Length: 325
Image 1 (tube, one colour):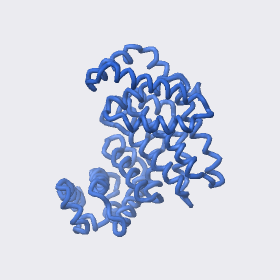
Image 2: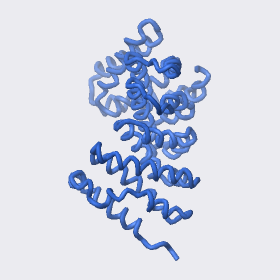
Image 3: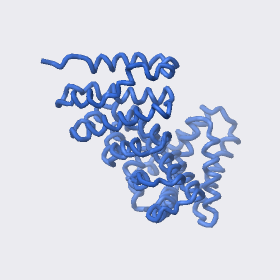
Image 4: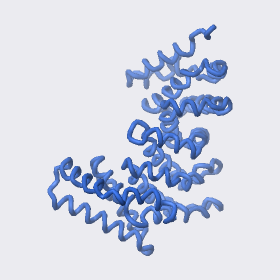
């Protein structure tokens, strides 16, 4: 593991100016006394040091997770993530926590206590992902590959594993910042990890919360030109997306979605409708399009969000235009 992350971390370590400027920025933006800032930094360093002690690591992960929750501003979380990323062995230790659970996947014996410990380690990695430089570093170090075995299990999913899958999806959603620095590079790196097909698998087999986060990631990808191109590169891939989204909308009959979840689904269809005429996929879109989206089945939810009717109107226009001659 140390060799895996050495190359991606060394560039940040060489650039000491980044750390100095970030510290100054935090002291000014948080408007905190120097003592308070120093105390937070001291606690960060102590937690990082204590993680190396395997005998107390579970307790330290709990404390670190609580410390992450206490970071009330984005700048504070970025600072903590920056230090976790640049500290020796921290990512290696967190990855060891992930790999240690692999045998539990083979014999389906993952207990809730083990799931909680793993989720605390994953939350620490998600904190790392809050810093832009660390975010791209995690992807270049292929960290998502260590997490995907948990997402590939679709049958007889234990409740402890459901919590792990949800935490992993939240981590991937945190990585999927496509409109910020390194955004397009992050998109391509994520697509190379086959996150697209895994999100579809989670939407198809996951519970309501898992489907919600997986749909959010899918929407983020489809809103990007390169993400939409990836979806449409293979007819079978495009058809699978249409089918999975239709099945998702069907579940809304028994599991009423939030307005945000419904909006995410509509946005997915809006992105797909932009290319409905290309490659002869118009019939597939029409065949698998859930009419309940536009026949006011979700009227109560739609009334709570004025953006959704506008989006649905545009979607209906996109799908009812005559094919180009």
